[in-house]
Length: 258
Image 1 (cartoon, rainbow, N blue to C red):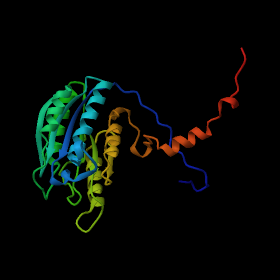
Image 2 (image 1 turned 120 degrees about the vertical axis):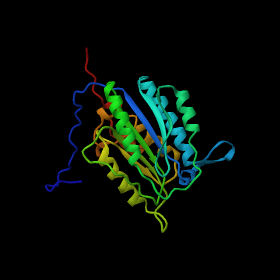
Image 3 (image 1 turned 90 degrees about the horizontal axis):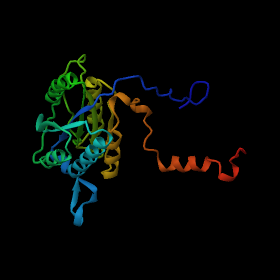
Image 4 (image 1 turned 60 degrees about the vertical axis):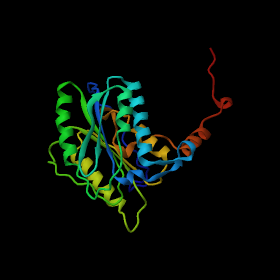
């Protein structure tokens, strides 16, 4: 992108404002519509088809392990999204075994023609007040899988008590689906309710590694984030190789004598 004068426009430097560090309470909400059973482009053990829901479960466990390695005081709870919100494991815990048991309870057995996020936001606001009273912050990570059903909500615009992150797995555009409209609705929901900088990622390629990469970016603490437009991690291999090529060789690096 160039300015009117033709000079390259660079993003402003990221400055982390002073802020007291707060441990997180994170509520996962997983879409359990039958579209979460769409197969990914990778097979599981012994060639068994690997579905979106299988990949989501693995990505969650990766996230929990990594987040607790960073700080063992973070806590997690689990819920699902059918037509509306449902608890899967209400107690917030920092035990990996609890997270594994909760993901095993996530099952996709029905197709829903409606997705209402209102109850999810109500529960999140209620839990966020409890977390705040304990000096913690609250975050919702929503994983959505429907390509034709736009999520809806009824929420007041001036009530922002928690951070919302979204990962959207979808099919390619076609006569029977409209992933762009669904994505726009998810963006609207995020901007409507998120207290801090919330991130939203999407992909329709069916690649497990992309989901894992996006989940790893969500490890970032909401109080320590730049805006999503300036997120440039992970670096592409092309950029890395270009940077390596531009680095002076050992022979050309001057060494000062002592």
